[in-house]
Length: 341
Ligand SMILES: Cc1cc2nc3c(=O)[nH]c(=O)nc-3n(C[C@H](O)[C@H](O)[C@H](O)COP(=O)(O)O)c2cc1C
Image 1 (tube, rainbow, N blue to C red):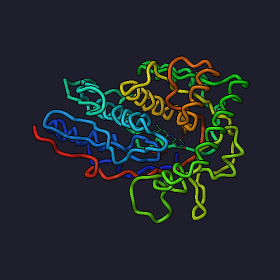
Image 2 (image 1 turned 90 degrees about the horizontal axis):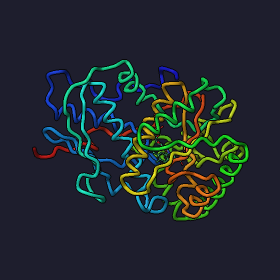
Image 3 (image 1 turned 180 degrees about the vertical axis):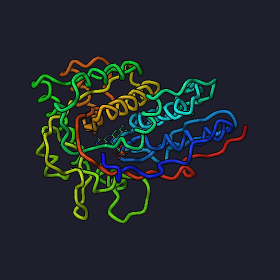
């Protein structure tokens, strides 16, 4: 990754050892906002209280056409929650997280610090990787990964309560590619889906700090020629920055959870965050093929035809990629709110 592509100050300086818990909570939120989210909606709100941090989903950032049950929204929030724990570990703080403490449909998580812990090199490295991890929609070479990395990623998913099913057999890859292409076709044919996506596309010069820049894509020609069709964010006004030469044979994995409700979506998000950072630690870029998860009938076919255990939440392509620039994030002040006590 080229150094020029790394944001010079992705977050404010970390609070010192004598800081108050609330200062640290605010900092954890500033780090967590670098989580990936569908269409870069950044659908989270953090409430900083004197000794706790709350994570809420922001209903104004929902995608009713492609995510009517808020599954991908909660998964995105789950990644942010995982990044909070990475930030806390890097400050040497042990945290306890109550997930859905008031039941489903409200507060997603409340987190408190419960002690200190040694800061390991791994904690620091994972924190450093948070702003360097990006979605790379260009060619990804799974064969160039150090041997064993796919299995390490499976272990990472399992350690976070999910499973990562690697789709390796040529027949299974062809099955998945067909399902991705069919779901993609169904999605692009729906005018309401198109309008929803258009609302989150950002043309060159757009100063908003959310949504997907139309340059952060591979372009329709290359994307539709590839083994797996990717969602197209491009426009005629920008050049596709992820279009480049290179082997395109990604490792493809389907992140699954046992159930398919809010707690499972938060689990999926935690596992996704952990897998993405671990992949980045091994020099792997990642991107998504989530179209089949958004079409209910195709999601069921994917489970049956690939004999998945559990519910598919995220389909990932992983491999050695290229240098891609960061996608913007809103300022901490826009996502962080002070709560009483
Ligand atoms: C649950 C989820 C689903 C996503 N689905 C797709 C997808 O189907 N296609 C895609 O190109 N990107 C997908 N993304 C990636 C987001 O577009 C990306 O995270 C966002 O634009 C921010 O960019 P960054 O990851 O480079 O920081 C998804 C991300 C999440 C968390």
